[in-house]
Image 1 (cartoon, rainbow, N blue to C red):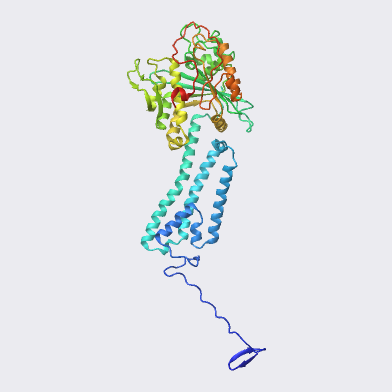
Image 2: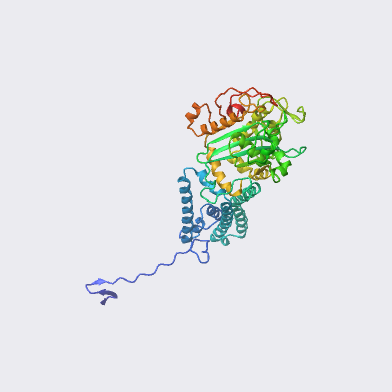
Length: 527
């Protein structure tokens, strides 16, 4: 290496390049200072009050967005990635389930409801912490005093807002759990089938379960409970196909199976010595009034299950008693019922002096819906049964999931006051699974009313044969069922059983004004 005329050279005559000078470090944008322990993006603009609130709100929807804006790329990417994985997992779960509603029935179990409450509470706290951390990461201390106060108040409100959905879920599930514990007994009833030990088969090997659904009339001026509405739902556990059997309250002199204590007391039928007495709706209260005969207190449900099961030739597994005045509160809880009234219905007193429900399309309150189904003024028991079906059908149609969720607290409170059952709490989750199947299954209905069946002079063998045939027909494909003269409809259409020559009655307590042909609830009630 040589130096010529003050210029360094290397062998070969090439000039030596001077060393490079280091570039000055980039300065932050004017008016902004980097937060302690963090670096802003190279071209980030200073955060204003509005932009800070916007990024904080965005982080409540997309966790990690605020951290990315503040320059915490690693933390932001981790939060965004975890959130994306959770969303994709939820989407995959919903898309891979053929029946999403059936998959969600597992949440009806007590342990799952407790889990949901805990998880919802944890997520509420986690989202609260996420919003606060995102707000702090954006550096609100760089704002002026007014901006700090405004953002602090708005972010506080945002924290409450993001916690509200999780709090609502926890409260709703907690209310449902409380209602279930208030309605369903924690242990098996002595009159109910024993609980199955195999969790995979909660119904103990049964393929069909029969539920007795009772509407109780326990008015304040009466002693005890009169069962004015009695229906049996016979459900096939595999398909959900259901047959509804409706029995009139004035069915006389029912028989009891040999296993019942009342079989010995009434070998010829319930109060057979009374020509116009011994009605079916008196059995429950008679058994409650005579614990010495029944072998214990409050055996009315057992006596009625025995009587109706023996009448139909079925084993009644469980019952549910619905207090009619509690049902009125339930109707009010969903905002009333819209029903088409065929003709004016007077109610109250002996001659309808309390009021009149006018004909036409009406929205009935709970009290009006109750009396519409109960009034006997210028009517009879069988007409009343038809109106009761309209009330039940209207409620089933109008109590949509949206209505139930919007009024869940009121509905749960009314349900706890109105229901009594011997279905044990461990069977609630399997029962919900069956209810989901019934929702989309074939439902048929058979009423034991004149002229085919006379309650004053019942033909027991004919009733059992009709019940057996209805169950058999319900298991056939729809075309075969129609060929067998049975109409099936998910909306609750009633089958017309095979026509047989009706026996001439010796007497009947009431007169039937309903047509013999069965109709769907849409045709009957104009739903």
